[in-house]
Image 1 (cartoon, rainbow, N blue to C red):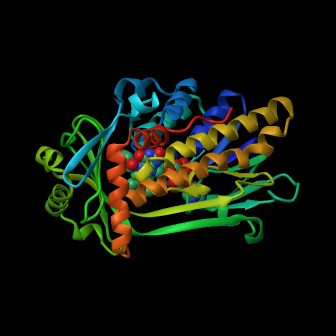
Image 2: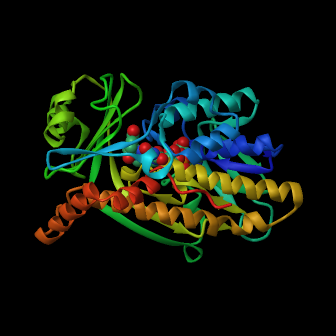
Length: 394
Ligand code: RFL
Ligand code: PHB
């Protein structure tokens, strides 16, 4: 079967769904192709922290009604180190707070808005392949639905298909440059119905490894432990997880920890990755398809949202005014913000994790950096400004 649309979007994660929503609001027809089922997409537990720029955009797009009802506003975070817990007053230092609202909930809100507007998402679309996006012709996608071959013809393709997606891999190797750092550890995450150990997130540096106590609500915690890349989820019983978490926290946080059965448990490797540019003719990459940050800075989803905002602006300008300016600037504009978030995410990762190959000098520097952070308002301000999210380019 052959279909056509103005913008064909690959991937129904937050990037693809949000782009589809912003375009549809501007009267631009779009179709999303997603490899997995809607249930599978909703079952992935991921991000939890939203920057104000993300909340503002969701607000402007009419998507934040439930978010305002159910999210938690956090004016600060804690950093635990050497038996102490230091409060970083994000709001006091930067003027802004962050919002706790799970990626699952944003995805659910976006899916409901898309269904209510009658917009088309083809779930379980397999074998998506990209054609004619670089040669000045009209691009199109081929794929299979229930085993039957399909074609989707379009003016532009948006590759919102995450790090392992097909879009970036379809670009000829000589047209793309990639920058990557992998880390010699992963994060083991547990979701459980137990009250958070503190009213705000606790990031802990400890000789046994990094730990993070985050949350989804006042009764549901999301906690992470730095783990070995060779660890498997089966090796980590709930008892072992909570005991290890307790051992890495400061005494005040540890005393508040109430172990509970896990609802979800998963391991994610940590990676820094950027692909340049983010445009190839009529193909645009957005979100994790173009870049990955280690989760320590809570930036991945927020970057996906800022990419989508820039891309939607460019596409809307193109279809309304026949102007190429926004699309021509998309890649450079998005990458500027991406690299600043890459820097911050790398710095937070380096500051808070134990690196197996770290020598005694590096270890001392890490301790000195935390000591400086605990005692300097300027250092805390720099952290706060980045954590709450840098302003978007005009
Ligand atoms: P996604 O969410 O990976 O969605 C991509 C979608 O594309 C589909 N797909 C395909 N569809 C069709 N054909 C193909 N060939 C396809 N290949 C893939 C996939 O099935 C999927 O549905 O990318 P997107 O939309 O760019 O969104 C990015 C975010 O998901 C990601 O950056 C964040 O989750 C990162 N992240 C965090 N970000 C934050 O801003 N704040 C946080 O607090 C935060 N915490 C985290 C995180 C990521 C984590 N993990 C698991 C890596 C915590 C963790 C543990
Ligand atoms: C989360 O709640 O999942 C979360 C919060 C902060 C991070 C990473 C993950 O830095």
